[in-house]
Image (cartoon, rainbow over all chains, first blue to last red; front, side):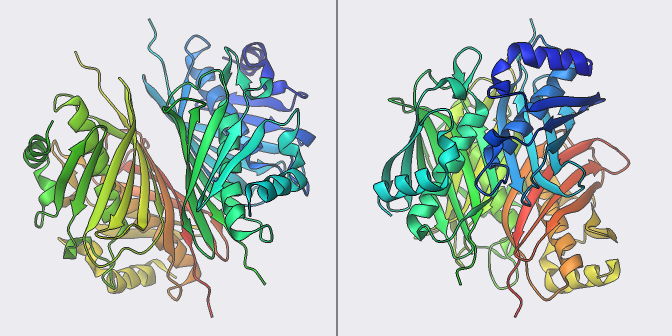
Length: 138
Length: 138
Length: 138
Length: 138
């Protein structure tokens, strides 16, 4: 799937990720990787203006899901089986960029990692790995 | 902290967890444990009426945070350093109950686990473990 | 499988876990759970007499594997797909007891947790969760 | 610390990692990273000649520990607080190379990731992330 096809699919099938205003954007799709952007937005914040843990976890899950979808197509729905997060630094008060890379894309399981950094920064604020179960295709 | 004190503290310091309507409730506080409830609500859903992964991850993070807070008091703010999730089954279309237990409450680190099940069910739908850094108290 | 059948199977198929002397023992097999014991032994130690991290990780992996095997039988070989560990306290200078509980035993994936404590103690020194892929049975 | 200093320190302080024959080698030390090599050796094997899970977990723990040590020096002893592993593919019947990168080196916590591949291959067989607590230095 191209970036446009992937975006259109997510919009159509997961409208609720845009609940409260569109903040997630697919920026790039490449071989075994995608880049997503999460806008800095009220609903992702904790007091003091920092991005909340759950908003970063949601971004990681979406990035991994999008990366798998981009490579196996919109037919089969992958299901998250496990996710691991390390929170490294306080994010800046701006958009967050998620670079996602698939480490394995098997017939039954896909595994990937996501590194998140504030836009324009190299410092990773949150690192995630996740495993997804891919349903059998009839 | 009692259940009432803990609820009041969370309401005051983290009003944004109630953004879109109050869905999180502290149900019980005991020695090294708390129980939280997340109402079944539109903003936690994925298509088909199932609870989203991020909503369960947010519940686990809140439960661990609340358990630590209930035991060290509202002075020091714990910071999430890592979280691990296993998603085991599709949750039912009703409230989710999170049973949280602290496995360690040290001076610098607290570690706990959370088992989440649909209200009235014994089957765990999501299991989480988390580590929190506790700032030095001057 | 009973405790005796399980022990005999592990001895026969995984003789190398006893390399350097038998230190692992299946102590009990129950519904969705097993208890294993790891003797305090030179080859599991770090300087100062503490049990090494890898020796505890090996015990957790064996306990989870044994629990799955006890319930699905010796035909299908489960494969570890992910493991997560939290190290909570320094273990005592004696045997380590691993209590393993399966949280899910599906057709394709099994998930379980392991709590390890020094023999005679209630304090958890290491907590693990693991996911195993179960091959299709023809 | 240089590669030679790091190797000498590990040899002196952790002789038991060489129990049964030297199989671990520090190959390279760079800014926030190290590369280790684990020889293919009987004591790391499972039936069929595949490298065991625990041997890969021990390699990851050692690589992370060595990377931290190389950067903070041999004074303070870091303690593993959590480790997460994803097992992606069966390793080949040869040496395993572990590329370790520190994602954060704070005053109290260090976090890093390790990608392991069979020597001469690009395919990651095991991916790990770990968190280490760094004692206060008086």
